[in-house]
Image (tube, rainbow, N blue to C red; front, side, top):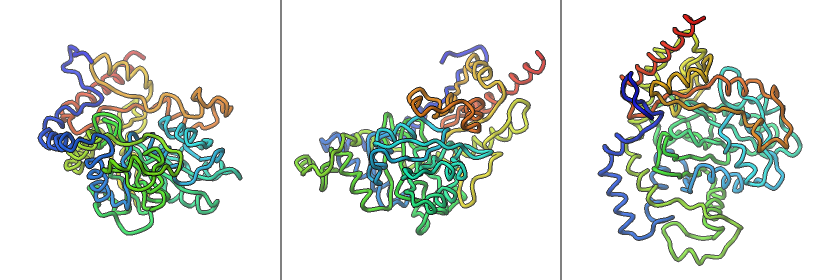
Length: 409
C-alpha cells in the first residue's frame, strides 16, 4: 500500500512490531525445532497442544495444518456421513460451508439473527429436515453465536452440535457444560471456551487471527475423547496409535482413510512464542475497539458499530475483526484506500449465492439479513501493533467521507 499525501499508510493488518518484540522467544522455539530434527507433527507441535489445552481448558487440542482442515476433520470425527445435512449460517467465510462438502455432507443455509451476525436459532430450527444430522453455529468477529439457542435446537431434534470457532480464541460462553475453563482470560465471561459446547470446535491460526502464525495452521478442540482420537488418526493418514512426536508412528496400521493434515513445527514454534502475550493482545484489541466505538458511534453514515450489539447472555467479547455497517460501503472503502488506509469486506457475497452452491438453487432474497450484512459490512484496521493515532486517523477519514458526501448532496 502506497504512502499518500495525508501521511503514512495504515495497513489492514501487520504484525511486524509483534515479531520484533517477541523474536527472541520465537527464535528459541524455532531453534528447538531445528535441533530436534523433526519438522512436522513433532515435539513442538505436542508442546503447543499442551499449552493450548491449558489456555483454553479443553480436554484435547489437536494441532493441524489449517482452520479449514480442522473443520473437515472435526465434522468427520463427530460422525458426519455422506449426504448428511449440516445447518450453517448464510453469512460466513466460505470454509464454513465448503468444509461440510469436503467432509461428505450437504450444507443447509439459515439466516443470521436480527441485529447481529450469528446463526439465528429460529431460522435454524425451521431448516431442519429428516436428513439433518448437525448444526454448526459460527462465532464471528467479536462475539460468540447464540450457543444456548443452537444447543436447544440440537437437543430438540437430536442433532450433533459442532462449532466453527475458527475466529474465537479467548471467547467463552456459559452455554457449554462443565466447569469454568482453566484460563478465564480478560473477558467478562467465565464459562467454557468457545468450541466446547458440543462435539467440538476449531481454531484458525491464519496470520491475521488473534493468535496468528506466519502461515496456515489450525487446531481442533474437544472434550470428547473419541472425537480427539479420530481427529488424530485422520490428520495423519488414518494411522492409529501415537504419531505426534513419534517418528516410528509412520509404520502404525492405517485404521481409517485419512489425509495429510499435520501441523508444521515451525508454525507451532511461532505460536508458542506469541502465546505468552495473547492476554495482552486481546486487551489491546479491546482498547482499540472501544476507541473506534467512541469515535464512530452515531456518526452520520455509520449504521452500527460492534459495541452497539451486546454479547449473548453468559458470553464475553473478544475482538478479532472490527466490523462496522455503513452506507455507501464500497465508496467508503475506495475513499480510505486512496488515502492509504486498508480495509476488508466481510463478506462480499453470502454463502447461498456463491457460484459453487448454485446447484442448491437459492435466490437473492432467500436470507435477507445475511444479504443485508454483505452489502453494508466493512472491517477496519485492528491489531495490537496499531497505534492510537492511526486508529484516530481512520476515524478522521471516515468522518471526512460522510461530511463530504453530505455536502455534495
